[in-house]
Length: 118
Image (spheres, one colour):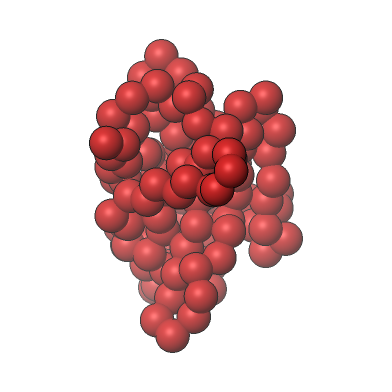
């Protein structure tokens, strides 16, 4: 059973930075894609950033140039460095791991709250 555990959320002022971490119970290289999603009340979960096994990244337009997704294969950990945070970045952030096959298999962490407020 895959387990993903996020950490690093919290309260930060506008313009500040946070780094989220997602520790996986197994090798993150076993996943086709890993990524970060976020969700606010009443809205659908949206993709923030994704990183595939080959190292290709994909970012939501709203975070391009501010957020960076990366991984440490030795530590089985995915990161999201968030800079120049704005109030609209406030959300619960979820780590995702995905494998593509006959069906798509998604694994999710429990989420970590990020609040950007003065």
